[in-house]
Amino acid sequence: MSREFDVIVYGATGFTGRLVAEYLAQTYPEGLRWAMAGRSAAKLAEVRGAVGVPGVVPLVTADAADPTSLRAMCERAGVVISTVGPYQLYGSDLVAACAATGTAYVDLCGEPGWMREMIDAHQAEAKRSGARIVFSCGFDSIPFDLGVLTLQEAAVTRFGRPASRVKGRVRSMKGGFSGGTAASLKATLAAIARKPSLGLLLADPFALTPGHRGPHQPTGMLPEFDATLNAWVAPFIMAPINTKNVHRTNFLLGQPWGDIQYDEMVVAGLGDMGKMAAEALAKLNPLGGDKGPKPGEGPSKEERDTGHYDLLFVGLMEDGARIDAVVTGDRDPGYGSTSKMLAESALCLLRDVEGEGGIWTPGALMGAKLRERLVKHAGLTFTAG
Ligand SMILES: NC(=O)c1ccc[n+]([C@@H]2O[C@H](COP(=O)([O-])OP(=O)(O)OC[C@H]3O[C@@H](n4cnc5c(N)ncnc54)[C@H](OP(=O)(O)O)[C@@H]3O)[C@@H](O)[C@H]2O)c1
Image (cartoon, rainbow, N blue to C red; front, side):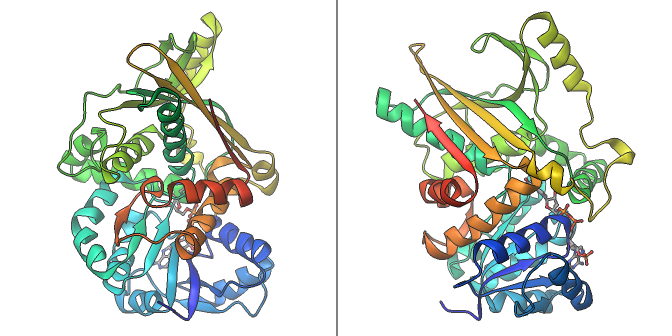
């Protein structure tokens, strides 16, 4: 289907949206018909100039509180990239508009309560209209989703079957948080206070696999000694969303990995020092409490450029054999790397993969094609063996 624009970046005035716009302008100066969108034409024009996007790139206005404007925007786009969050506050009508108009959609959502609501409300309509809707196309959850996929491909190649126990371990990570991410966490805490049953859903590793439950999962909520790595590990703040997306990928692909057990933790160190570091990490509030960034704020360019991450995935076979995969990324995970992953996900939907309409994960819909694209353009590496 040919639309006026290949891609519309919605939320282009926000901290992450600006980075996505800047990346598209620099990486695809030719051959991509794209526009910047937001609720204020004046702010969009100011940001377009400030981030060096050429003045010929059109501006589209649409307000998250005005469904008619959202539908009109969707009808003009092949793929909508949305960085308008917290998604549970501002995202529902846009997903509804994409599902109704058959428009592809990618976002950075790490809010599983809202994602489950959207799956229940729009899966059938998206399937009917052909809209391919993909949440979590940033640091949560692409490197983890594709990391497990890469590990399982290698396990099947080497052992003839997937690993039944997979450990995601953050070996190193350098970066910070933005105001939008802090606002999303606050919105989730407020939603749990209003509706305590949401807490149960968020604690459920199978919250995003309606009608399917797998085996008991490790909680990853307390520091522990990981005998596989001979090191202490600590809870990882992104694990609650990533683990749910990994189980959803397995579910959407028809359970090729069987009943896996999967957790994600941060490697804190060896021996007594490692134990102390794991305990300290478990108590840390990485979002900085009330002193954290406000909407529109986030890590500086220098912090983004010097950031990085290194993730280990360990697959344990039932007979005790082990296989590893490693995913690395340049730039800080949440913004420098995330903005590239999000933009490349949109291009992957546009140019590399087809697939039925529905509410997808990056791994289930784009899998190896997205991995190739991220290696070629976005500074990620994937190795296994
Ligand atoms: N998963 C990941 O790895 C990851 C990484 C980064 C960010 N995120 C998520 O991405 C989202 C954005 O984060 P951020 O730090 O970039 O946020 P931000 O700087 O606060 O930007 C929010 C954007 O939403 C727009 N907006 C707010 N209300 C709107 C409305 N009624 N209509 C239209 N637009 C509206 C803002 O427009 P104005 O400029 O007009 O106010 C702005 O463009 C958050 O949900 C965050 O959690 C996830």
